[in-house]
Image 1 (cartoon, rainbow over the protein chains, first blue to last red):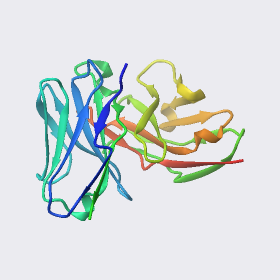
Image 2 (image 1 turned 180 degrees about the horizontal axis):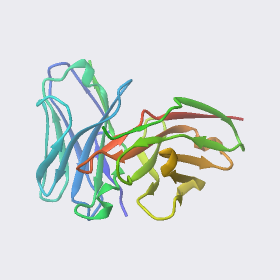
Image 3 (image 1 turned 135 degrees about the vertical axis):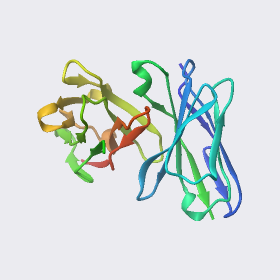
Length: 115
Length: 112
């Protein structure tokens, strides 16, 4: 069974540009979560999507946004990039509305570097 | 507020020696608890989970963890460490609405 996949592996952008990160969940999983892992800040929850809707978002500005497609894959968009957006962005997926919803499986991440 | 804490930032252990990583949680009810491992430049891999029932849970790669309600702990253990166990380890628990709250992580260095 294929795990969570993310693309691209690395992304280099200039300050002020926009970045788009993609995630495909495990087959059968409907929930997708995005986390940011920045140096010195640990793992922070960004966004949660399920059934095409945004269910929750963390303490991040509105320039962090995303969407979930009918096939449950997801995109994370970061507008007006700032240097501090440089981080590893991790996507995770899980089932929803079951006790297993808490069990999240992570992809390999996208390393975003803003110069 | 609900949270998980990993008191140790860095642990160095000799290959073949035992390993124990500490995790403390603060929750009112019985929590769901997880341990993840992250190799350099990689994503997180789920090692094991505790939902309820047996307080000693077995995971992958020879790891186990014990839930102790009296101590609010969920420590990760391995009897004999291999060089490939060098990585960063995260304890995690849901912080409402299924999103996970992670500890700060413990980096494990394995010396020959």
